[in-house]
Length: 127
Image (tube, rainbow, N blue to C red):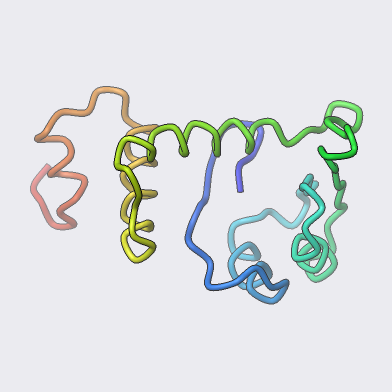
């Protein structure tokens, strides 16, 4: 999930069911948000449950925008993430949450040093 301001939440889901999307997205999506998605039915389930306006775009049918709404922010994030992960020549699924966290840290902090990374990684490290 990514908003127009680049705020991102990502995690490895156990499945792609609507109930999972509801459980995961409900705490992080504002109650007055407009949800724009690729049309996966789980997003519709979440939007119905959260009572959100939901716009679906089907890129395979040439639907790229709806007025000023689009999903290119998410698509760009996924493209950059895949490119970054490619250097590791495969990431085991059980380590993927750690790699996602690492990537979020890189995106949020452009001035990363080894010391800064250790401070981020250790929950009770002195600052």
